[in-house]
Amino acid sequence: MTSRPLIFTDIDGTLLDHFDYSFNHAIDVIEALNERHIPIIANTSKTFAEMEKLQQTIGINSPFISENGAVIYIPIGYFDQQPQDTVTQGYYWVKEFCPPRQHWLDLLAQQAVEFEDEYVGFSSFSVEELCEVTDLAPDKARLALVRHYSEPLLWKGDEARKQEFIAHMTSHGAHMLQGGRFLHIGGESDKGKAMNWLAQVYAKQYQTPVTTIALGDSGNDSAMLEAADIAIQIKSPTHDFPVLRKKQTIKSQEYGPKGWAECITATLLTSTLATPSASASLTGA
Image (cartoon, rainbow, N blue to C red; front, side):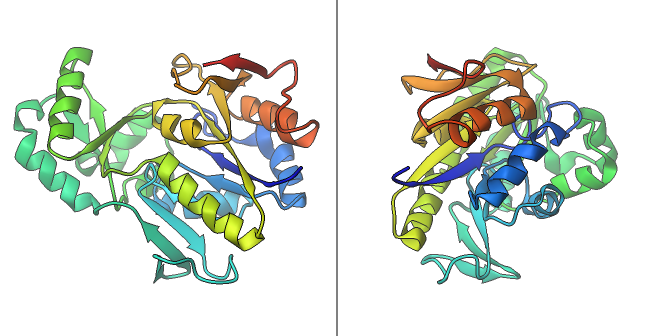
């Protein structure tokens, strides 16, 4: 291999099962990647609080991208030098890409009055209500509610009205992303931009080219998948593969973490980067 691989992965529905949030089917592959010192970099809608806990649970210590590309957290000392344009917060070097959450809450309050009965934002959820919507355990739901850069919305209206809402908020400067369950409002940042920025930091650290391998299952992963050198779409039990402009993607045959392990094994651990196994088909998107 002439470059160093970097794995950028969505979490919910990709590395974690959509229904029970387990990553058991990916454990062996995660351990194999750790042994080979191949970074596993979360690129997720999840919050800092969620990811800090989850990194410990999964057993990875890489930087992670939070709230759909709004911010990157790099453990202090992970790289030889602090990357430019980062600030120090606690135990992390932090790169911010958009305004804070309150900006988007204010924008919703000012500009979305005609739609206010058609969505519920995270800022209105209690821990118990979020548990009911997501099946998260209370401790995990509590972490999910602590957001800093974006606001997930549970849409209750019909699809036509949702598209009107998206167009309306976009016209007022918001960036709207549909995830597996929630519609996210935030800044002009995305998983692809954040991935590219961090990949450049890695390349500088390694003093060699890097290959970005991205895995995701839903529409809010599209920017990351489009920007990646190798795009892997993980099969979802709740929706079809999102359509990408990219000519070729690898599509898993298995769901969630089973599909994640299937495709990483095929593309990285048992073959060359460009050759998937029979179970992970290389197809046009």
